[in-house]
Length: 215
Image (cartoon, rainbow, N blue to C red; front, side, top):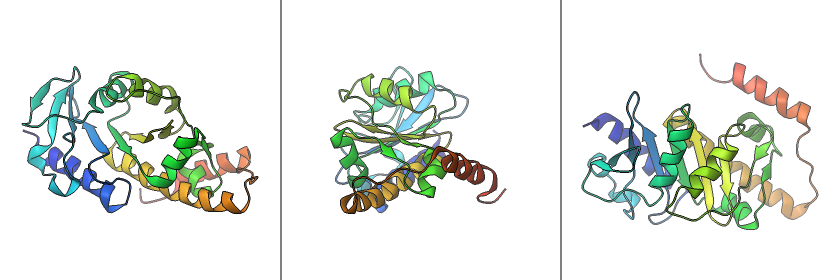
């Protein structure tokens, strides 16, 4: 059932490792199947190299396994909470990417210091409060912050990104780690760097939304 979509979710999970956003078995990608109340998500504790379309798990919005022989990710409840409360979100991604997570460990939001950050995250990526793993609490933090930005830093934990497609959520995760790395090194040299002014952020974001890429 839904083999092509399971393949897409499987490949997206593997791209997390390819882009150095995860290590060992931590992190996951999920996707809401269009026009259903079903979600495809990575199985818990399985190495990214061992993932196959067949071992992706399909659950309903109550968290019941509909198809799959493996236990779904321990973050499943958090993902499902987002899907229940944000109809415009169809993919949720969780990583522990090192530079972005270093800001989360400090409980610090990541302002937009670069035009690339402004393009994707507007005024910056917020850092949420602490939330317990394996419950809806993380989902509540995500929903609280993702109206203006497709990413949050979860305090003392890591990164969550969202999108109306897997590609958009994945792109946000990759660009977040890139901009966090640049900010990390820049702040080592000057901890008092000012973020981009609001008018520059708005100009960049508008230009990116209307002019970047192919139509």
